[in-house]
Length: 396
Image 1 (cartoon, helix red, strand yellow):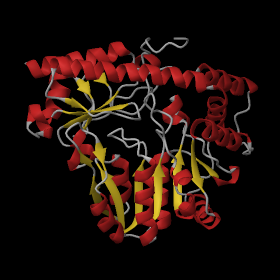
Image 2 (cartoon, one colour; image 1 turned 180 degrees about the vertical axis):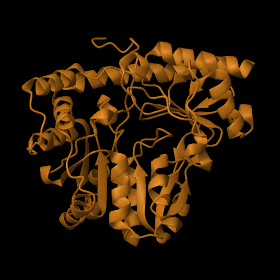
Image 3 (cartoon, rainbow, N blue to C red; image 1 turned 30 degrees about the horizontal axis):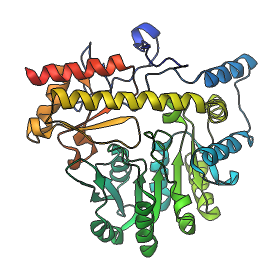
């Protein structure tokens, strides 16, 4: 490969003198012990694309990092990227720059719902959907995804229809985190039609849309359902695609002018959070204009990591099951056959015996109990070390 994804970069703050590490606290708020392999937070362990690093260096060399005025360049770059990658025509004035997707979820809840309103969430869910609902005084309406014997998740549309009647807003994650499903055009059209029938808002998180397995096609929601675009806000960002989470730059795509005004009034007047940072916008433009070759090699490397985990489990832990991921760089593994659904036992085994920091399945709701989510965007040597530690812990 032209780019190096094998070298492990030491992000320990004791070495760097910064907070550039991703070992998170456990469920009790304790920092994991030293020597642990961290594969939890959705953040790559690869160096960002050289074109992005060069653009940031050039901006820094300019020497002025004060206030800036937004130009059309970042909107044009985003529109070009979505058209090239996903054949999705976005108009520049649909794009609202923002810091991050997670705060955008909270802003959407505050903007379009009232305390006590129901919010429809599909589980196992990206836990910030639940957080944005519960922490703002709204009510979770759970539509549990259904997995077949191969672990392929689908939507229970009968249940979805009943829950949609009670909801004010629906959170969709596409590609889905943590299961890795990339929803088909038919699936997206069906949930939109149900929401349309009952006049519900839709907030669609498409942050993982560029991270697809070979041969998989992503279907942007507004492209699938342009007739309902006025009731949809889409959250996109270069952060997962190009390892730019620290740049705090995202693009919220809002088609409806009245909706956009309501959004801007809230984030501007009440939160004073308009826009994004200079270096973040610089990084995004460079990534979207010049980073395609780097991304294609990342995807190829990720495919290899998924294949490695699948092969390892089949040989050494055959009762564990890797859910077939169509998108994201997150492996969703079912260990229930080994722990009989005891998620606390599984957590202790992973953290104290295997000494690997993963995302425990239960944080994604009851539907995730007995699962582990593993970030595979790391050098294969790290993935191999993680799997060997897990095997040894189970053997013991």
